[in-house]
Image 1 (cartoon, rainbow, N blue to C red):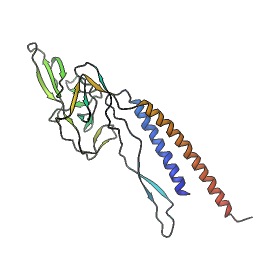
Image 2: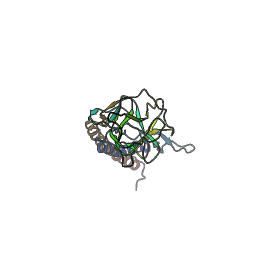
Image 3: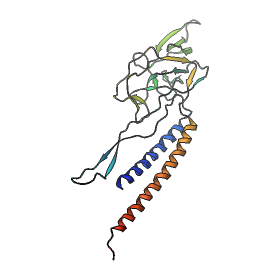
Length: 251
């Protein structure tokens, strides 16, 4: 009976966690490059042992890994010279308030401090894993090989200057996860090697890979599972009471 109730309560708890995950996904459906979060995952079950007794007390074992969907989103053409998207597999290497992280967000702009950053205010790293500093310019664009090219202010018209190349990586053979700050990094805390084979598309941004229809359908399914498990808990209580009444002494 304890295991039955444990199973039902653990399922309800997972559904409760998934509700927050789905709300997070729907809130970020219009954020470029956002990676869809997946539901919470219980990674095992532990039983409390007592000598010569049945293992009836069970506990869920969970980890803090936040799983996410790595499938690419749709590419949208913007015709903006600083917008760039990764085609297929791969990530930009960027740095926000925390450690260096991986991102698919490529809606770039130049900050007031003269640093190239994306729409989440993450500084874009160059091949040396340093922020790309942008001098005064007339025009600026990103080439299809990741070079950031400017026409310097005060230079002769048509003068081109490469001020850096975006750091890109496949992060191959690395387990990636979302950290508490919402950034994607390798689980071992390392910085992936730069890979020149990553393909990018200028004047495009990648939309989030959240599917609104799937999220709404999954929310309905979660609600149905919640109701089923609440009924299961209620039935377990009734069965337990009925069993107790059978062994109760008369009078």
